[in-house]
Length: 341
Image (cartoon, rainbow, N blue to C red; front, side):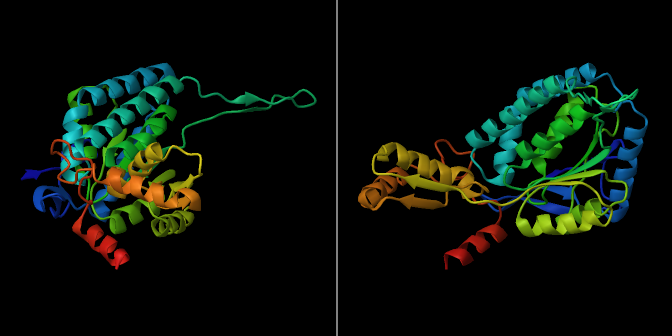
């Protein structure tokens, strides 16, 4: 079993009270690692380090083109480690290796994209009457907290970390307690690749969402919060952040629908419908969980979907040919079973 650490205040470390959380492989139920259960003291130390890293301007005032080159190095290091990271993601989240690899490569591309944007962040000059100069500046907000969900643990972390870094912000990333391993491994890979990030520009803190996420959301020295998650969690984070008037960026739950008309190619529709609902074992805010079908093709489409479903192999995410991996956690499986009943 792997005893992982979190990265705060310039070092890989345990929590201040040495408590840990067991991390499972959901396909087998096996405990595959432990991660620190951070405390409020750890949060305060982490935020203070991030605030100091922003204040010393080694990152926030760096030449934007150089920041872009550094993000490109991070992208290349992510590509280079994609297969290893995908194996970790599959073992910890339950998704198929194929899905995990695609997502991590997409995360690397996100860094490439924002690397190109980092020196193109521009203000504007506004025409005004008289002898006046009126213009706007776009500046980094400061310390940003990134509260990451369990369904796409690394991809969604990289999706928000990359633009924050491109803008010159410092980053504190908090992965979901069920799925922390890929984000921890990614930061380890960045350090091993010596991409050149100044100390404490990116930190990863692990622990309970209720305790650590809440503490980050309400912390006076956090300047911006990003959360992807469910509506109740988003409401709680927004309420906590409002105490400090901290800006919040939320991406919350949703529903996806498929609308099928009589002239549709039903064989193609069946493939798209199955992909839309079974990708990532259906654990997506945009899963196509609603079918709106014209009555003239209803029965034929149902038959086509049933035939297509039979081709989707279920099993452990790392097994050859598997299209649907396990659900992320036994607690989540229990929730799904309750809904089915």
